[in-house]
Figure: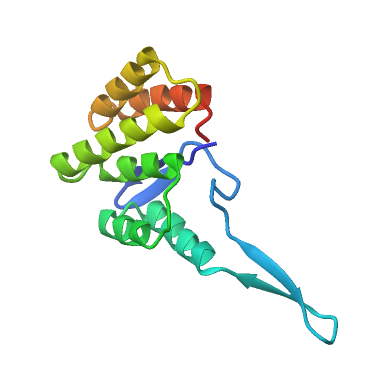
Length: 148
């Protein structure tokens, strides 16, 4: 399920739905030392992703974009979360991010139709003004096309 960061008030961020570890969860490797003790190693990608998820929860555009730059790749659902953070900022930046997400959605999601693209584009266009309605439409189109 996609985590939808939303500004609740005075800088707080809430979520309309929760996710279990996101699409890129923390990478962990187990190693056993000579004494038989197990050690868990977290890769740098896992740390960067955890930092990115924390940045999303703050709703701070600068922190989110900085953390996103540290990631080797950004999953489609995470890219949409970035759009949600950018919706209240500079309109041109939001527009570029929304168009980029829509293009990726067309290429990466399962069985996307022109109608699904139209629905997603309309929802992204409405997102800054009609948050709840737009997020509901995005949630439905994402789930219908395998974006988690």
